[in-house]
Length: 623
Image (tube, rainbow, N blue to C red; front, top):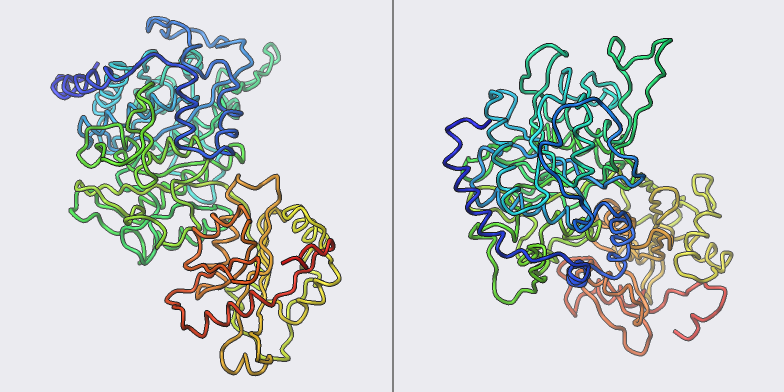
């Protein structure tokens, strides 16, 4: 039961929530469709609907009636014979005792909306391992009271489910080796099958007979991810272990863990050298090691402006290490979101900066979605990600394209509004490696990288290009054209995406003159993504970001047919564009500070007009 000190703010929080509940109306499939129409593209909507609306037990309209007394401790019996497993998010709520009632209401309402949209939350309350267990219980009861005041089915506060404790996760420790385990007597699975939102206090018992004490929340989240995914193995010496008279128990998967959500006053992962800015997307396969070095080094996270939240590189590093460990044991489609409680409740709380503004589009009020879907700069990052599987702002967008400094906006309280989407991602291979050999204009006659080098899988590269463009490449013509001017190649994953870049010579100059005058043009010759990966997984963003951040940070140009549907995507990621007269081409570039009279811009246009295509169908002649 909550401490008597908590009753005053519990009543205030509950009153706020009951007021918000008046906006809720009966559920309907039409409302979900209308929300998708406002917030997602057709491709996004199709992906969401296929994943989250195919399971009967994810809709509130299918959830059975439930009474809290049904969840009393009992034998560990099968929780359900239903083959449908709920999609869940494990949510870490750090320092809820610092949140006022409005922010907590926003978080609770977002959890409710996630459930309506097919994602059921399992919340871990983290009040800090240095605090007493009464505070954990108070805060769990506080969140449950807000959820229950406007949501049916509601929530269930849970304790006494974790046994064992081990030091905080380290990089050289396997996610499958932790001694902590879940022993919940079937309560967690029962709650999920009844559509309840479990609110778990980050408490653990050292053994079956000792009292609970505050535990490392990150370790508990990893343990929950294993348990829900059916990866928790019997522990030697426990009642679960095998004996000749007892059949070896098999772990059961209780749910599909789709998201790890970290709601922390620190917010998203900071960008080194840009105080207040956060990464929009992190590809762990490519970026984890570098980011960890930055976070624990002198370029780590800045302190919040008013000191309310003392951000530290160690805290951000701990959050990033947590999601890496969790995602390593989950399906590759799972992802993580790092953001603040204020951002998580954006559009749902009564916080002054989260109130509605004129001139923004809104979704219908069904499910309490009024105020949720706004213009891009105010979208709720968690709900947006569920519907689109993307961050609110693409990671490959230049800073100039992110409106009103949205990526590093900070509330008056000192909480950042930025969010970081994290995925296991894919490796990115760059030839030559810009860390070892920066991509600089080559001296004429110097040895060059060739597409026929043994380090490059040419058949797979050609297949990637032809599959992406839907056209047959004249491979021999293309190899001949780029053999002496290849700048480099970017490959994402197993040739799932890639880019071929060249150094081109403007009209009127030979190679020696262009080099001596510094006028060799960095040109994006081919940009390709397998059709099966287009619009998903961020493959295009990963390749484009590598090109502009690692290979050609000073700028690159390219062209595209004027009627190419991808041009909108190109436009958003370029710093300038020009439709070339008397041709079928639109030119794009990422270089900064170019005006109409710039020699560089004239050279870009010259190259974009003169590059000869290499397609086997000869349709390029019409261009």
